[in-house]
Image (cartoon, rainbow, N blue to C red; front, side, top):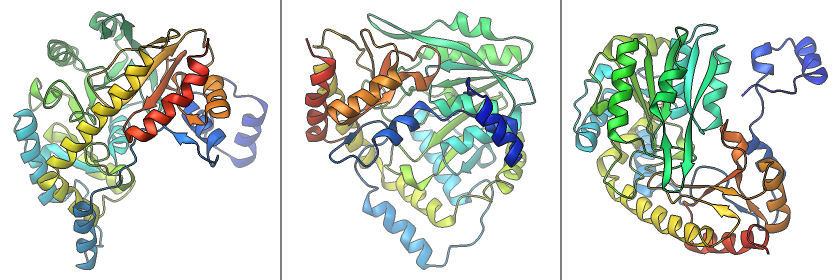
Length: 400
């Protein structure tokens, strides 16, 4: 989000370095501020980022290594290897029951790059994007970087879970709206959009002739069903619907930086041009790892899901006993997003937790309107680490 404190120092930087004002106004996220504050502290338990502590499985790494040894180190197709897109077609079919064609898939350097490419492709200056939040802060930034305007619709916490009033989304759409952005299952809340709402949202976007961008990178990390339903289940092949996915979460590949997007066939060439002038494409040897993950990684997903469910229950069994805490046990993603009574500055409170408890959490203020007062904890870690973290956090959050 834009930096509300842009003033003397920022103006001097723009003048001295010749920075783009749009870039200069981008604020550092509060997650980064907390991480900088705590990084390098002896014994700190970092639960602030969206990743676990298990490295990529060896069989996936071996596929990449073999590809490099075979000399697959040259430029590649901007929309992705045909072999990988064919595997993505199979994966989409068995996961969602939806059949795609190759020209409806583009492989990208991360899920975030897919979102960024979509925004570059769609947004003209002063176009509006309705963002359903709280949501990962980079979403706000990529709209603003492309000189768009963010408007908001909010997921709300109630006694029985997180919910979204679709009418709030519909009311936020104006004649300047270019797209609606939704993340389901959601970061940071774990909220999963109900199927009837997904269907209604796709139909609304079709009626209004606007784009729908659905970030579904946590689709396999759900605890009450085999997989979260995709917007692809309700979209026609020519609908203005883009579904973003990633290898990062499901296959323990956060550092590899590879994702993909499903889109209408008519924009594949446009996306290829944008890939060409940004990264020139995902390296072959990384894509080969992705092919192996898709073919042989179902057990990896199952083990991660089991690990996350154990982690979720460890964390929420404690949170639900603490009088100052309001928390909803989610059925998706791998985060606890909980409110602490009398916390009005979550960034400051997270720094305090580092000083007192030596545990790093993400402040709710990072996730946009509605996030302040909340904290986010990633529970994709070992039971031992999570129990130590909860013992330490109790000293401050559960103190009398």
